[in-house]
Length: 324
Image 1 (cartoon, rainbow, N blue to C red):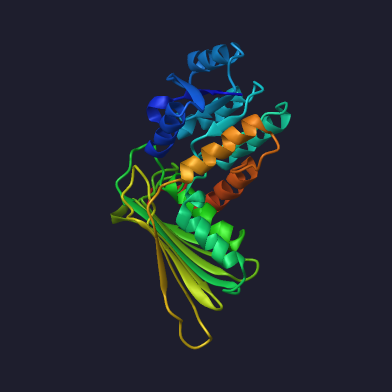
Image 2: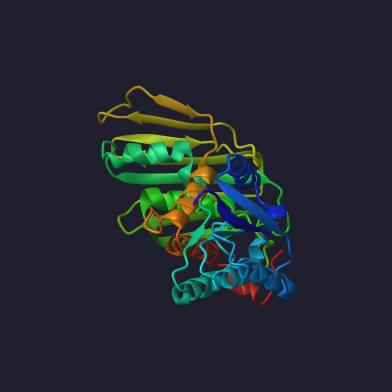
């Protein structure tokens, strides 16, 4: 296969990282991409299905509004082509359950979600370091993910917040116990929160905290990992859209009394989207190639996100009154 033919649904809403990678791959002659910029309504769904009936596709990339992710995926899965969502998760667990049900009934179709932050160089290097076992068991973790302001359609938990939750679970495993608080002026409507603070604990006893914010005037993406024999800090995230600062991995081992010499590794590139899309394209050519970002990973992430939102004790009274 010389060129992989990709239909990009909602290309006008592609984030900058995926947009840059697709342009690079197209210029290199690896893919032939064409855009289908239509609304996720009945006419849009029919346009997608008409494009799929041409049998000139090898794969589909979905980049429309996150709220429309479920109907787009269900329509795309009606064909035999692999499907890639630039969003890491839909907005609700119910949508995720229906997506997984549709995936299970689809014949041989591969579905991948765009978990790109996990594949950035700083995160991959940190995972490799702790994977050697030299740092011992993970004891504590703190995460801060925040920007100032957001578009109405973008919920802080289900965008970059979902990516941070995914990274935290990559290091700690699933969280068993979750507590949390959100703004006092939140409503029943998902997306009304501007600040969420969560406390989490794994079955093995690892303690974690997480702050997701849209009033973080200094854009921040930071995860602090405390181990039995040292620590690692992930600071910054190289992206085209946000200004979180240059990625750095700060780490040090300890002999039980004081930390040894601290090491700071800095990373220049932003290759998370490239890794994710390359894996998607590889599976088009070879279905047995390694799979990234499957629906189980998305389900685990969206489940944790919703448990965080549901943990606030004010959530039940919100069904009866507005808190202000």
